[in-house]
Each structure stands twice: as C-alpha cells, then as structure tokens.
Image (cartoon, rainbow, N blue to C red; front, side, top):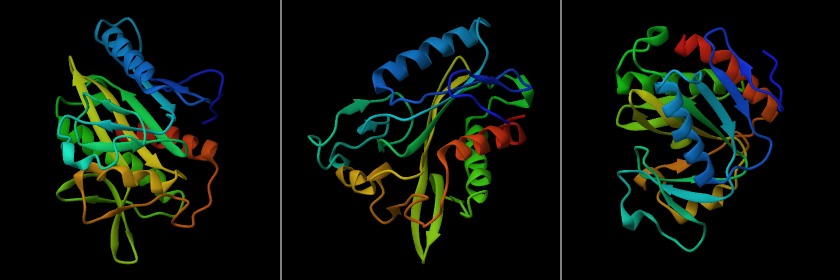
Length: 222
C-alpha cells in the first residue's frame, strides 16, 4: 500500500488517491471538489480521496449557530455547504475529502446515514492501528474517545452530497494546536472536549497514518 507524495494511487475500485505536501487554501479546495464532483457525475473522472491540510481557519456548516463562533477575529471564517456546525482546520490535522458515488456503485446505496456510519467506521479502524479506541456517539456525529472518563472528539465529519456524489469528509486530529479550537464551540458541543493522537500520548508518523487510511478504505467502502 505504498503511496507517493508526487502522484496519486488508484485502488482496485479505480478510486484516485491524492496527497498534498503543502497546506491548501480552503476556497481553492472547495472549488476543486465541486469541479471533481461534476466530473464524477458526468463519468468524466474517477472517484477520489484527497488527503491534505489547511492553514488555520474555521468553517461553518449548514447548522452553525452564530453564538458558537466565540472569537471571529482569530482566524478566517468560511461558510461551508457541508452539514454540521463550526469546526477548526489547521496544521497537524489530517483531512480526507471523499468524493464517491452513492448510486449503487461498489454496493454503496443511496443512504446518507449509512455513508456517515462508514466514514466513522473507517476512522475507528485506522485509529486502532495507533492504539486508540475510537467510538461513535448515539446522538453526535464523529469519532470520540474516552479520555479518563471524559468524552473527547478526535475526528469531525461533515459531508455534502450533489447528484448522489459525496464531498467534504473527515478531519482527524493528529497533532494540531488544540488551543485553536477555543475560538469556537466545536460542533456546538459545550459538554465535551477535543483531543488528538499527540495529546493522548500516541506516537505516529503522518505518512504511516495515510497508509492506514488507504489500507482500510476498501474494507469499509468496497
């Protein structure tokens, strides 16, 4: 499951994988995703998983509440068409933008909730490789850990679907500055915290983490 930083990798399901070595501006990433979604819908390009980081910024999902943006002057704030509320993106966070067809391809049914569950399962499998027991929450989207009795979020999920092609995706905290989450109520949640592999004391190599994402993708999405 070797991946090159310079060139994408194609899985057996012809899903293109692309990994960026530099931080990608948010508006550029959204424009690129929207273009790719249109191409996938028109059968002009393969599905894609795009691995990247953003510079420090906040995004507001379709359910974001103004009062949850605590320090709007801290970082740029972008309105996002994805589901969910406010979230933070920045260095040390692995973002996987996932552009897949939910139209029966590879057994992927037109079921948004099932798709989100698969994203959660994917993250949980990868985290287990690094000694972290990720869990789902019955009332909250994303992946959580029990950190000495306190629920803390380690991965956020926000998706958008157009013509039954997905985009946006997951943001997993590897080693971001957790203080940067203090400018928002992440996902509108005030009674839980955020954590990262680093804050949990887990050692990791970012390239190995990407390899694990690649390895478990087919197990979950087929």
